[in-house]
Length: 69
Image 1 (cartoon, rainbow, N blue to C red):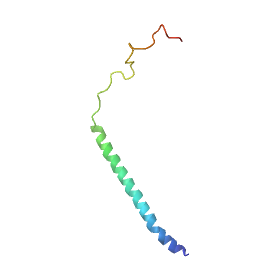
Image 2: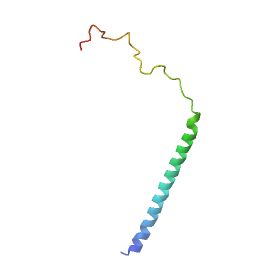
Image 3: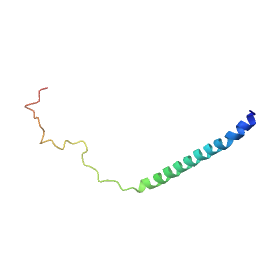
Image 4: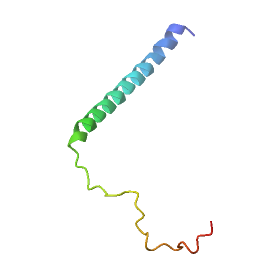
């Protein structure tokens, strides 16, 4: 089989693959750009005053008397 014929048969597949990769890349870049443009305008909050506070401090199952450390 002649290598020129083989290259000629696979060239359309390679071109289609490259065009699809380029289209996906452009789409991802546009999606990321639109997300980044909207990010500063996004509403934030409400924030918790103390995120690491023990919210059930009074309702602990074990107290100091039963702490067996």
